[in-house]
Image (cartoon, rainbow over the protein chains, first blue to last red):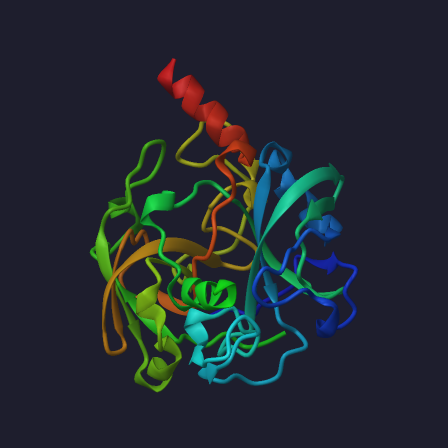
Length: 149
Length: 149
């Protein structure tokens, strides 16, 4: 394996998890900054050509994990690997953000749902979608249907 | 930070990186198995409702990193965070696969591009696409245009 090291940190308006929009219909439109450490700035070369980035980060304020849990978007329990729960065996989070602009080693982005100060492990370009007609969203689609009914 | 531990391993037809399709137009249609460790099987509850999964895994056979590199899909160098290069500061890979079926703690999937035996760190449901009209793919779109011309 390997020893994870932050490549930077997230600047976000959220100081605690209660402030992060959650549950069905939650919108993630908050702006924030991916503050990459200066020694990695060269690794951002050409990143401004991509409209969206995949941010891989650490749930650094979550403790332990539970294999079965009830997410904010449903009142039924689901397996942790079928949810975005923070309480995972490896506390790794993933968010797709829109890149607004780059200032050196600082990336201004839209769509953050992480807490301020969250360590970033990796950034990758978002390259392609799954064809909409092929996408099924399991319990989440069912919970949305019940919510609408 | 945390100490990454495998939640399982990937069974793939690829024994070495030369066998993995790469470069422009590479198709990832290979079938494989996400072989989750039995102690985490409960965490897969309800995962079969999702058509696609995000697999987060370790480039366990890559050594070191380079901040600027020339990917197989282009003849020009780009920053590592604008590519899917295995030689990253944190050697974390990400692949979206199609879930074909589940057999207990084994998930049969399509679209693997990992080597056989690759450690899995996390699985997450693929929930939503970026609107196609909002997606820009930077140097990759440019390389494709040059390739077609």
